[in-house]
Length: 475
Figure (cartoon, one colour):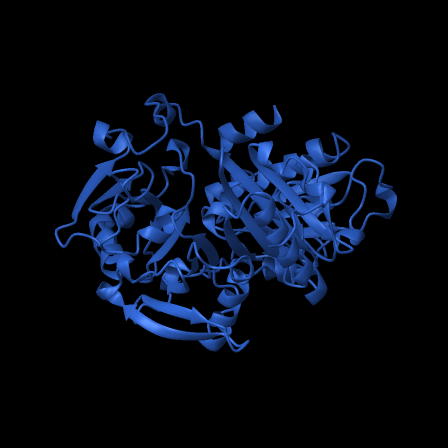
């Protein structure tokens, strides 16, 4: 048996509720200050540990797109040490930059920000000499889960459909062209405030460029060749990633073996033939849930060594099946399975609780003939966006929530959008699954019970408008 870890960075981690984030620094874990949660250098690797409630942990192994092989290897080793120190109970998740799970993104309410380089290329946010500051441009993209990615500070990086943050050190500009989305604007303003007021402890000022100055502010445009550059800005792009991938395939269950040192998988079952009884506590299995990601299930009689190889097996499976390297990989343990795993089995019944399915909330659009879906993890009533159509999936009941400000076509097509969602979905569910349309402000008690709390005043006061959020953030 592997001896208990002695890494001082992991002392007392079992006692802390909530989120803890480390980055890999010279082969060691370095605690990330809470003020910097949500900032990720694309040349580094990170580990995030979240204890949602006592005795239940999720550990996320995050890889920047330019992280070195050594850093990735150390992060994997440290993830195993964390696993050991917590008794092998945590659910492990492999996260790749730009393709993080909704659960991971839900930890960072103001969105995430990707910074070029490694941590050593960063700066002291308070004592920095602003005179030598190199301008940085961040592209804020995403309908629900907004990511701010550092891009080249050049006119060619801008487009009329998204929000951008120009960070000049002492001054931060949030550029919000007319075609940019409401949520991207709110997230952009929130992220800029976080940089100025928290990361730099009030040493920077935020300037909002919307209807009053998005195309004319002299300081902002001086970094892009002057206001005349507006004529050459690209139009809005409809390039949000389609959530539903590999639709023509079936969900598959595979048995894992690496007795010879090489990963070998053998098909156990697929589609509706997948059953809980096919999992053997003496072995490991891989469930390929298509758009739902890859799950590596470890039987309770497997060795510590086998348990530690779970994410490696998942990565090797991706290579063998020629799947994108960023595909979600999650490790789950025998007898501690979460509903994200059990939902794919027709016959899974958890004796500890009657309901083995956690409701799912999605923002859905079908604007250009392509069904686009973005999941919202750990959702609350505030995630119901009045500008959109949302889908609440309660397995055998589908609720289509229509926001008051959704465009006329989205309102008209709401029911068809739900039907399209249901047709493309792969979850095992009752053949007579019902679809119910609900309009903002007319929610009934059955719908409201799926949310942690409900306040009828939230929708009446329009507290989530861009104008009101701007006042709340900066006044």
